[in-house]
Image (cartoon, rainbow, N blue to C red):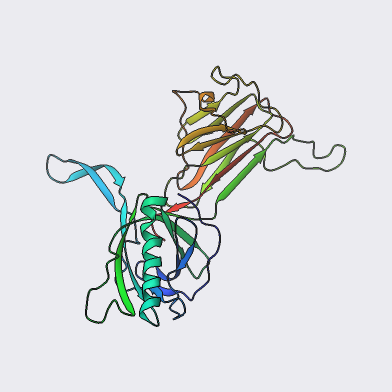
Length: 316
């Protein structure tokens, strides 16, 4: 999902069901922030906390096998897209101002069906943030009651979320580089880098498996990434027949994304043929600690691996 990293105008947090006290901003597909919890008359719109739903844990579809004597055993839990019900109050000092705001907000949400998803950003008083991508589904209609639609009205819209999980917009980064061990006493006390290639532990603080992005910096003649606990691995060979590049030189880089699977050389060329298909498994990071190994054959000064990912959560 797109990650919004810039900041919107700050408003006091308000109580939102399933979340607690929070400051919420909607970012439309072109990056315009729409503060949702600012009740000031100057802004003229805000979310109505009474009626908000769909912000909690993701929905699941369960596949089960019946036990012969009653009951059932869970075989698979498939996360489903979620719907968020988002009631809005919109007003103005006169009819023209109200209509202008109503039209602007309707466009900000409905354009997600043409320009790509918008993003709901929830910031909690403890400083944590969660985001989820949304598409407009229905509901920008108004109440249709006596007195509404002149200087104010409410719209109860439904937002469709293809990915039901919340994402931390602050990426986690892991850097490991080539290092040479040194004799602690010769010729004088010294230490080598603690961030060297080889076996290491990568921690995923989220609730859900994440699919990281890898950047490999040469020199390297063969690169192997292994998740030790499962044995899943993939190998990047820059001298593979479809590529024929030869060993990565110092300063050359290759980027591997795991969801969707892509491999790109620094000039943008497609290097997916450098992976050891069909055995390659572009594995993800499970919640908690993950024992992994970064092995770079032919490494030397400048060799490095940079791993980045955004933790994913069941709830905001």
